[in-house]
Image (cartoon, rainbow, N blue to C red; front, side, top):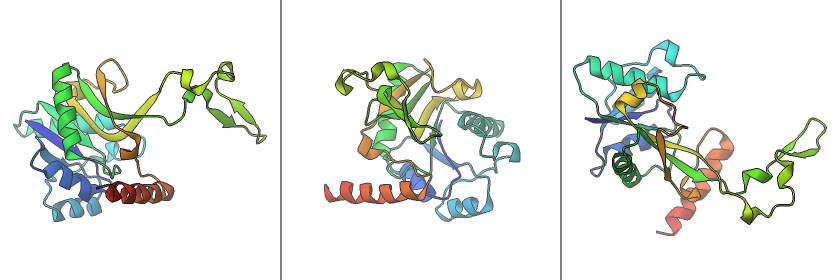
Length: 214
């Protein structure tokens, strides 16, 4: 069985539930909640909420993998067999069910332990700068001061949309950022994590532009 584990954040949880329930997905959806408001919202939209996450896994410093591991073990204790898990973040407004399915096939074809979404940085990280305590500018990598942007290696970051993985990999707590994983590369205009009001505004503008092109 393949399950979809949806994060408990209230922002975007309805969208994540809808995406995981579309016909072209290959998932049984489960919402992992740690607060009554999120549980009520998930149930309102007919999502399964079979358990409440324990307190020790509900603070802001707990990583994704321990939370997924707990969910897998809870479900397996109920006599269910799990092959693969897809964790969806409720703060990713541009999730697409077709992409989730393609990433699953990429995971299987590669025989890797994980496949998760990444996107490229819009500017070379090798020429990144910091603003120091004196409000002056320093380069992180001053050796690249005179290197042309187009001559530097392209860099990617976690897009924070989904994490496909073998159930055993999550139980073994293998790290995402390792040789155990392969990337599913997304175009930048399909990526916007929402943590701040500025993120929300940017997502609204991106959504308007994407829908104008349809």
